[in-house]
Every structure is written in structure tokens, then in C-alpha cells.
Length: 120
Image 1 (cartoon, rainbow, N blue to C red):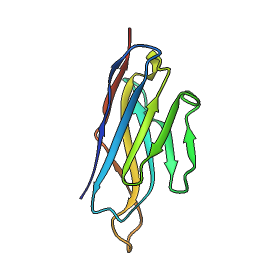
Image 2: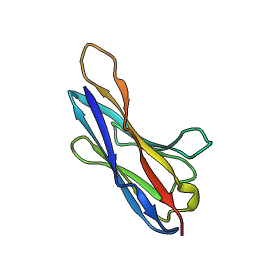
Image 3: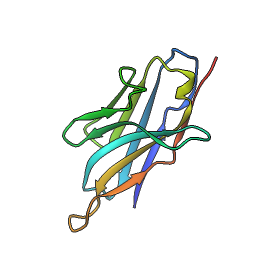
Image 4: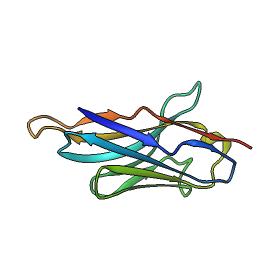
């Protein structure tokens, strides 16, 4: 059983910063990639940032230069969000493409999401 648990969401004023964390736990052999997505009310879920196993990163144009994705040496991925704007308000969810068995293909797992509200 694999679990992803996010933390760090909350209310912040425009221009402020937040740091989200997501920790994967369970019978994990290897994590290939971890990423952050977000979904605002009435919209589709969109990619925010992804960190691949080779260390490469990819960001949505809307957050490029303001958000930074990183990962520790274990199973935690972070999203540092600076210069936040009201349009960044959304539920932020992390995911991980990981292996629980060497005889099966990697599988994608999701966290439950954490709310980020940017408002004055």
C-alpha cells in the first residue's frame, strides 16, 4: 500500500509565499518522478511542475520563475511558491510514478490534495 500525504497549504496574501510538501510512504522500491498538479473550481486539473528521476524539471508557463520543485534524498517532494497571485488559488495535489514491484510496470499514485488560497 502506497500513501502520498501533502501539507503546507493555507491562506496567503498576494505576493506572499508558501511551501508545500508531499511525502510518499509504503512498499516503494523506486520513485521515477514526482509532480504537482492543481485544480481550481470549475476548471480541469493542470500540471504545475514535475521533477523526473534524472533531475530534470518542467513547469507550467504560468508559474515559471515563481515556483520551484525539489526533492530530498528520500520520498518527499516540495513546491516552493513565491510571488503568489489570486489565480494560483486551487487544490494542489502531488503524484508519484513509482515501482512497488520489479516485475510490474511503474504505477502513478496521488495524494489527497491541499488547499491554497491567495487573497487579501
